[in-house]
Length: 576
Image 1 (cartoon, rainbow, N blue to C red):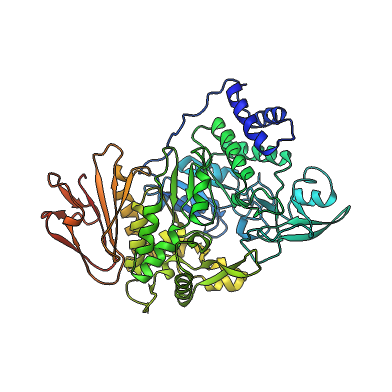
Image 2 (cartoon, one colour):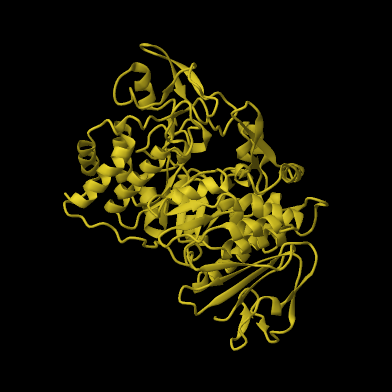
């Protein structure tokens, strides 16, 4: 066994389990992962991505067709429509579950029979880089492990985190309004289990190293089924200590390092992405020293970009972008505007004022959005996220309500996202321009269902085949923009980025390829009025030939100006 690998693992384990025999624990973990003696470490600071990488996010059963298993239907649909547009597919939890549309997992090693089987997952992994959730913080109260917890037998007896109503929980950061402790009856009396999200999602106890070993088994199984990208769901809450905030604790960061070390020694191309819906400064800590997450969800982007487009003012978006550090080589941002969850409001802490946040919430509510709340340590309920389909979130402005610029505003948002430093990720309902599903909210009584629609394949194909349908217009134009992006070295996720200062109605930034042979000036009119851009303000090199990648329009007079229609974007490049 590689002593370098083992030594590094032991050092990490000692930071989490100082009272244990970490040499023995390291041996068990390495054996569980099947790591070979003398296995070399993966190259340091290696990037697993390029400008051609685009992620699509979907549930297994978003697209359905009769009696066919949804995973098979999804695979056919993806190959037919997005084989040339996306490189990776994130299939949201496809395991047997009891609630929360998959995030209350009953069995980590099984595929939900109603979706299909492992053969369907492996088939998709043959055509796309496969991204899957490692729901690492909690498990279903209806799982076998939790049933064993109740019976006080293994495996499961000590797998879940227990609390005491007498503990000091006043500082605990919560993403929900429900109680953090839930009483359960067991074979040796009443116990209180920790439930960060709901009483059906019981938090796992990583203070028990056997839980870590179980997850090593799960990770190896996923890798062998074709998963190469791991989304660590709700990982910020992983380690609990009463009397603390129970979020972002150092043991959590050490456990991420351990999981990554095991993954990338098994499969050098494995990628870890942390899902931490928290304020921006806290989110950035999950890069570690380029030894935790390979990529972090860019959680401040959705609320700031949407707010920019409904207010016609890019002040806060520009200020935030200027404050964002370039990701180290081997790390990057995962950029998204919409997901299966809502638009997070915590990532706007310190970026929007309370008045601006309330105006944003009021605007989203007027467009059909719903608001979910969390409970603060002092007992107050504060907005946690806005639940709304992105297409409807951009149907108008904060001042004037719905208007006729919805499609253009929606496209502008994605043109910004596609050009930013990082990897772009599209929720499938954004690629399809799906609208608010209020009927599904009424059916499930869950606010997040508003953006978790399910399409019948025949209905969806008819919409995409109809050139007058907004679904067709959005999907075709987004695929065209993606195709343009994938050919530009300056859009590599780690290419240089600088913010431009063009006033409050024009949001702009400059990207330069790592070889410095291509520059792209990305300029977006984020208002509903025509704007002029003086080319002298962006210093285009006079000896180069410049043109707009989006329209193909050449720039013939570098001392002149260009006119941008409402919500129009240009990508001015010096190289085709």
